[in-house]
Length: 463
Image 1 (cartoon, rainbow, N blue to C red):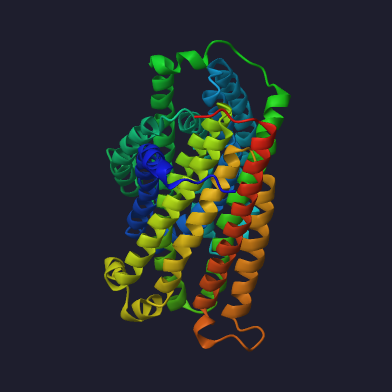
Image 2: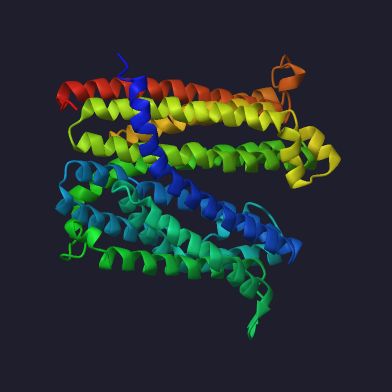
């Protein structure tokens, strides 16, 4: 039986929006960083833009995997917050920090020794050199980035995402002048081109960390958590608990990123027009994706807090309320995207042939949003229950197997019987949409079974 009640929507939706609003603004601010880097580097030189594209792809693949592991702190601390075991949150934060240190060493070693990864692209030595410098600079900021991820997970767990959003917006305000200074040069500093973006990002990463630590250190709200009450050596049991949940989450992020990366690589075989059209639609999809992502993070927070408070039925009700609301919202967004597809394309001002190629892909964006909303909401709900291994398996089978595999067969008409409409880039987007739909069904089933099991093993408190 699904414990979803329409009467609960009036209570659940405002709570979700209160948390999701700041998260959405913060996510969009971070996306704007990439937009600024791309636009400003493109004006410097084509070689620098190519180096930026290569290096950022490598960095993002490494970064999302590492930060995914750290994000396990959010549901763990959220359950402690819901159970009012506030003093234990500080110890979890300290152990997550030790884990972040270990992951920083791993990530830094890869960034500083990325020659093999860069050689795969077989670009000119000049471009490879710029990309290598970009990655080396970002390695300097990785400790701050990973520590900041610990603090972000803490703030999400205790329903204080607005603090992080304010800090991110301040950072966004600094990004433009710092990019101008280090990309083009000024004030006695020589322009660096693409690697200048990395310098600006590193400065902002350390700024974010210092400011956020200041909040945590001096704001009385955080004192009950006892984060700075004592020094803790690594507790391998707690770190292993974080890893058991975080490693599958990190790998799930990696699956999502690589599925899109390889999708782009395959579509590139169809020519520059196909790739340009795909990139426009993919970029638009990424921006829209921030809506269900923000709502899903908010859902994870509320569900984990309810589980910690031993309100199992309430946790499931919040989960289903979010599934209903987030999906309904994305249906509306999908319809709007289809209706205003021409106007949205005009914002990118692409060549006419790219515009004509892109229009049919908007049909897939419309469906894609619905399936994406279902799967991401279910995945984050399961993380609140500390379930991440089976979702990882589901992602691998659906996104890699059905999405990439099926998209490849349709896109390149491997068996010779694919309808013309589903050949080319359309086939890859269709395969991706189907894979997300399959993932959504399996993840929602897993959520239902998990919630039922929790209610049996943890008798709920009536509310």
